[in-house]
Length: 538
Ligand code: FAD
Ligand code: N01
Image (cartoon, rainbow, N blue to C red; front, side):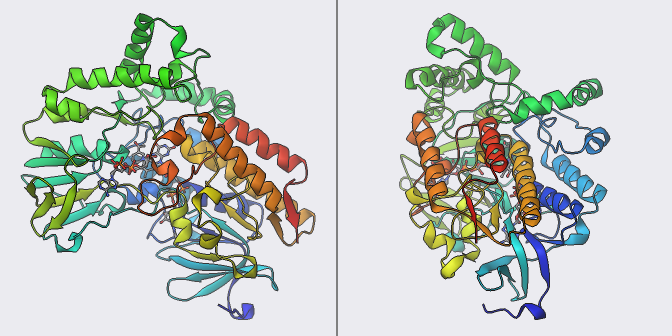
């Protein structure tokens, strides 16, 4: 891809993706006077909230914390209707911010980036679009999302199905009509668990194809009172600090106590209270060792299993729904009437671990022991997370080395702070692998990443440094830290998308920094204060 840069547009920075990350990155850089262009595959802003329009889609972090915090004005002008806002409301919020900051004028929609190559002579990135158009930029910033590359498993006969087929992460803009239809859902992660109760209310019959049963706690969603929001906004500076220096990006944290220190009765009382309060962390935050110590983990896991047994009337179905992996080693799930849905006459559960799917036929799904006729098939089968969207772009750094080749072995995936990787100068990854993003309230991680990258670019300009990359030593150190911290917990003991285990053939390795957003921020700030230690100018 040799490029005559006189024949193409050259920007200070190119950002790929117009979700929460890309939009804030555009705003920060533009405010600082840089020329920036954002490229987005969709026809509008929103990212996750543009694509995931499936019934029941909503956030799992309280809305009042799952928003930008950088602008008091934006906070003051927005209000949330419920504890966990639904997808249309979150998308409206993103549109409101895009309008308010006049972001669209620097975004090119309907444009997929397919390649990016670092030109060592010009010290620019050359970035290619799907239609072959090239642009160049000094800084190449990926804001591709961790969960934007949908995974549709390669099941035999997939294309033969005569009915309607959908993936939750690529949901159509028009309402899908399930009424009276025979619907099948494959997958019981966060997306499936949100969609299943809503689809069940409309479908003629719903068959859920479950590979791994899941722990899920009630969201206990409810409308928000204006007064409650006003109070939160009033103290938001303090709240923001608490979020920023916490483990998961919310303004509360675990009790400093082991689950094994309390009596079974006291644990039961606290877990029951947490169940009634609802929320992503309410059960785990009773103690500080649930994700670390198997016996402590089992206290929470067995509590949820006892709830499933109580809620689901048919003991055989309840048994199939019992998870056995370590609780909270996949992203915890909160739901509205998920387990209750299996008490409906029009819902059946198929355990595809015992009787796996053999093929998709024109009329439905054939497992090893049965055939299910379907009119609609919904894939709630997740994403090729973290590395998936990066690998869809042919990214080449110095000496024409591709990122995909550099990271071919998952256990050897190396980044510095999850933000940069050696051999790829002036490239920054927002919410990249080995950052804490996916283990947190992602808004906190996103704002921290964007602020750090914007400050770093200012530093480079002020110090007349044209090109700059992470050193091999720094990334070896960081990657070792990431693995060591994850290995101290139970997170690496479960097959999850954090481990790359959900995609056939994907190399295994823990893909995030598990030390928490607070510690991560301190480390990043310290590195910046030391003149970006671990980076070398070229
Ligand atoms: P995204 O929103 O994924 O945006 C990335 C954008 O990049 C997309 O629009 C995509 O089209 C574009 N793109 C990708 N590749 C290319 C390319 N090659 N060329 C051009 N454009 C490209 N996190 C939480 O903290 N709390 C929640 O409650 C929560 N709920 C979620 C619910 C769902 C259903 C899902 C899937 C994720 C959820 N997440 C949640 C995680 C969520 O992804 C982040 O919170 C956040 O929205 C990510 O923003 P982003 O801008 O980094 O990425
Ligand atoms: O995806 P998942 P998701 N055959 O990977 C199954 C965020 N999110 O879209 O567990 C049969 O979690 C798979 O089975 P198994 C959140 O971070 C948040 O639900 O691999 N089944 C699993 O049951 C979340 O973690 C919200 O055995 C197959 C399911 O499909 C992340 O996005 C809402 C299969 C996939 O679950 C991803 O969630 C939605 C196959 N070949 C998403 N392949 C909120 O609530 C996969 N499965 C905020």
